[in-house]
Length: 377
Image 1 (cartoon, rainbow, N blue to C red):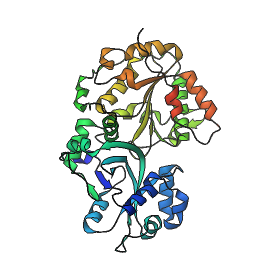
Image 2 (image 1 turned 180 degrees about the horizontal axis):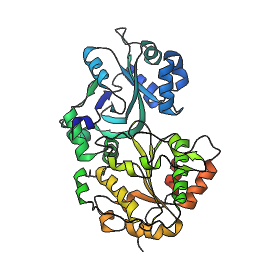
Image 3 (image 1 turned 90 degrees about the horizontal axis):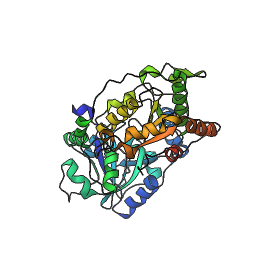
Image 4 (image 1 turned 135 degrees about the vertical axis):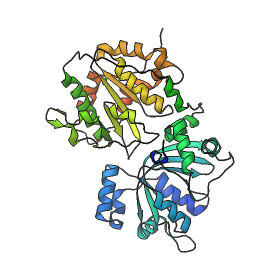
């Protein structure tokens, strides 16, 4: 694959001295609000941030001007990955959401350094996750010596990033795997995934599938996520609700966000690329087909950390569990029996109805409602 399919990765040192540590606490450990930055930004910039953050608070960082910093900052584009390094460890990982060169806002957040400069090369971060990974564990994956320590604001070599994505996929998933002390899985294991043409005979009228899609779209929006459904499904509607009015129109693919997810029934995203959850709705005689689509995704992003769901009628629960126990799916590479949860139609209806009048929805409710594959007695 070409380097153009890779997201750039930036390493940022936050902390290291008293003032830098204070800044780290102010705008990374403690999130900021759109209201307090409104007077410093243009109406267009505020509108863009409101669209990105769905009224949520955010983290933000910046760099002082200088030839190298300005060159790297200019290369930053939405969707690029930023790793925030503090005291020997990667403490946060997230995506670049937007950037703005803004002295006044930088002074408001961080004042000035001893030379009278401020961190005006600002970038807003979305989909951030706390991590706790020693830099020694990450360095070799990008071709650095284990003892390497980043300085200031740097960009990892794009060829190294491309190799990383081809070998391991999702960088946040890799960080979480390293944090748990588990072995990384190489992406080439996707060659072990079988291909099959599935003949799907509908058992139910398609509107039940449409109903589940619509309820998951609505819940995703209440969870302040962007929602994707396949292109062929976007013209659909349920009870007068046009899907296309509530979902993303375009899908963004990179090496660590594979195109296989484009055909999954419902995908929750936050930020330009990062996936939060993926749902396959099974309404056919062959529940194997939905699992196969999720297995393709898992094979291309084996270190991913987001939950996967099979949504089906309650009477299919046992068949779903039996399929997930197949060696093809439950082997050490895919471990779908560990990462896929079952959600019954009635449970989705119950959760959606209870959240209908709420302004927010905690996505962890679905995670808690999903049923894991039980161990055989």
